[in-house]
Image 1 (cartoon, rainbow, N blue to C red):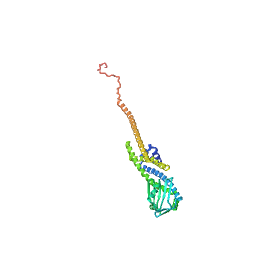
Image 2: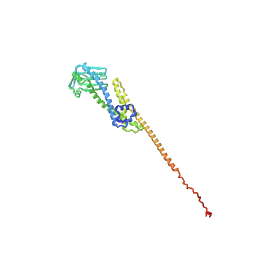
Image 3: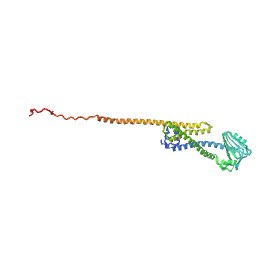
Length: 333
């Protein structure tokens, strides 16, 4: 399998369930890991933004129905808001409180009392300002600043209902989704990138402890894929939190711990593979030595035969007449 042919979802599958195949990522260019980082964080941001937008649309729709059918008339002009009557509305489903009192007699004690009535989250409208409270946090806005920011000069109940009807809940939802997604993507990019750097440093330390020579780019590549399961769990956690209200303060710890465990497991596997390669190389070297020795033995035997072989003595042909050293006795004459 060529690295360049590994698709995005295949990478997720390998990163989560095939630690032994992390070697496919180790030698890749860091740019490929960076692209994967941007994509998987985008998936995370899209899911979280979708959940928050869906929740916001439900709240807006319910609030819109209350404004349209139950709330009294109001008007806004020149930075001043006026309600025809005091408003107090509470929604038990979302634990949201809406309070409006635009009379001139609002004292600090009355304002503090209104804030006390907002237990979880809510809005408090006064004549020239609005307070948004969520839990222990509180934000104050000047109506004149909001009108300049959003280009609102005058507004009343009939005009608000008309504007909402013309845009539609779908249009409002798309606007909210785009705004939330952009901000969420930037937040998650920064947060996840910091985690990525921390885990990269950790991977280099683990590699040094395991006596493995690892370049920074190798740790860089391993770390983002080690974060994959944690990111997926973050997506599931946000869904569960929205649907059931499930919350745990230890999720962040578990989120990082899983990534660190993945890094350690991958580096130990790499070390195991390197040891196996060393053993295999040793076997190959021994085999080559044996083959070389076996090839040398026949040559040595041939040389030994040539050295040990003596040349045969040549025998002269025997003559019928035997030579004698005796002098002639004269009988032959």
